[in-house]
Image 1 (cartoon, rainbow, N blue to C red):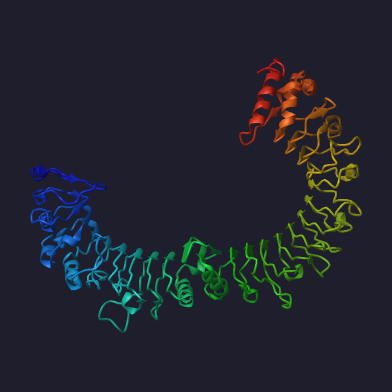
Image 2: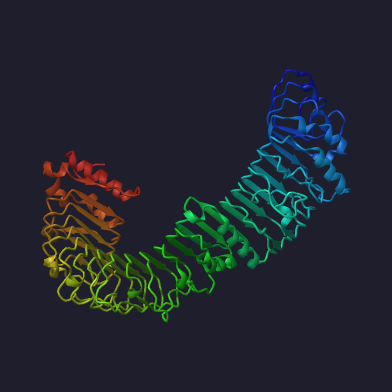
Length: 640
């Protein structure tokens, strides 16, 4: 509680009492006529601390929050506060406490709010806890030219919204907790008394509209004219009675009416499970629609039909749980990218439709369980195709002799895939090919070296049935290769003179206790980076075999929990970086035995150019780094 003597501070200009638990203002606050800043006024029940004390404070600037308006008896008291004469107030909060939502006389409540009308220069208005059934006409009057934000909160007795559509500068509107509101109609958009024409398009400047916790709201009507032309975000939550079809229709009308819809390049449709909600946002060139199942289902069906999306280049759909057919037959010509994530029941590219699509990129992940085959002929200019965990996909193929556009192809986790894409057909511009966890795929295409002449990166892992080299070998220009455990003997790779990066995954094989076997590695003159990963049961690394890689600069040994020994005592003299990660036994071995490093730290020229990288703060790599540093200072590997 503030001291009663505050009324004697007649020259006080600034009083900020935000976040204080005041129950009422001190007596005689109206005597502080020099006040410029008064953050809050808590209306008391007595004459000397009631709302009339605000009447003489005409120099107030900025923000004013008037609380406990339930203590105002009638309109005369409210009028005595002279809110309309406070010309320098920009933000006004009018708040009733929510102790009792029922009002004894709703007409008196309306008269009180009518008498609290602010000046027309106000920029922001919040009305919280108002107990009347209807709003006075000044709320929403077009004379408030500077009004940019309005919040109407917990007006639980109101059954009709004020006419806010003609506020010319309104950018943000929040409506929440109208328990008795059932319908939003023309009264929301029109100035009172105007039933024929609209002076301006409804909500001409509105960018953000939030509606929350409207238990009885079930109907939303739009005017004949295009409303919300600049809306960038629409958020509706906890309105369970609002009919889905009506809401979806309104949503598409709003999107179509937007002046920025022609600039949209990307549409994102996301289903979430956070209760009843819809969240539409237009951020730059991206239109996002997020909501419950019915919202996303309708959005998928309707978004393509919006004729104004003339610049649409990308559609991304994720989390849709409905059995819905994607409207592939009417994709806009401008569309280049289609990405589908976690939509198992979504039907895509019906096989009976012989249609071509101008897509440049197609990604399908954990989606489209009904898809069993994909014809590349339907995508003549496709450059990037990524398919992962498409559980029933059996084939990706083409009938044309060549697909000249395809550059990147990734297939991951498709257990039923049996036919390799482009078996016997050429993809002359393919540069990256990945086939991972395709357990029924038996072989790579024949003549791979001629069908894929520009292939630079090849990743074949966890495809257990592929155990033989393609006829003719790999493309000679291959620079990066990742292979799995089925190819223990790599001596056949002698034609890969351009290869610079090689990754070998052990895949947890129990039979590999020592690697590499003597004579199993080829001479790869350009190899600079070698990674050995996932040899879970391997105990010994034969270092001498690595001397075949005369250009090797970086050696990575990762996820080999039982690797405990490095035999041969030699590493390639060209080595510049050794990275050991998640190999605890090997770390212990290096701490106890200096022999593997003898050829390194006894040669200062070689040692000074070597570094050991510790990634992700890994403790064992850091300790090995300290060990290595000790070797460089001639303290030996056993130094602390």
